[in-house]
Image 1 (cartoon, rainbow, N blue to C red):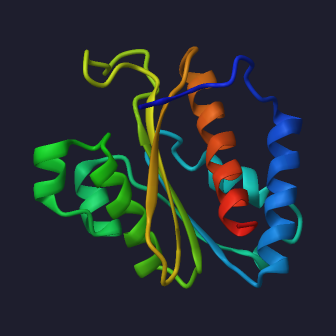
Image 2 (cartoon, rainbow, N blue to C red; image 1 turned 30 degrees about the vertical axis):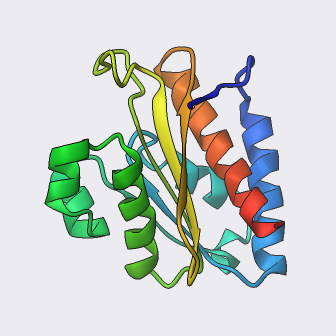
Length: 172
């Protein structure tokens, strides 16, 4: 069941605050982060690298929009994309796992979704976003969100939810 979006969209200072806390937690756990982004186009990486000193805990970010980039950069298998599509739990799991395989990071986040205004279907409406998280050596997990608003709001909410999920796995 998709998780509904928060009623209000988070602003830039709110994203900055989340990223600062993420940096503190990553440093405290001696972890490095990698991002694998589709619908956010690198916004998560931008948000975390806005924090001074992020080179101590941010390894790299991959913005993989096309099927070909998802396959080449993140190791998403063609049959997964063919049978499930880019916006699916299966693709998200392969993206987050591939990000760890292809980086020196110990923690990964991946996002794939439909930010709109077009591209939605009855099964996958605009605002459908899968977010996945994984620690090196652990099992990946992914969650479906249904965000509301325009393209900007959907993408902003995705960035916030991705960072909040990272904070959750770091503090478990």
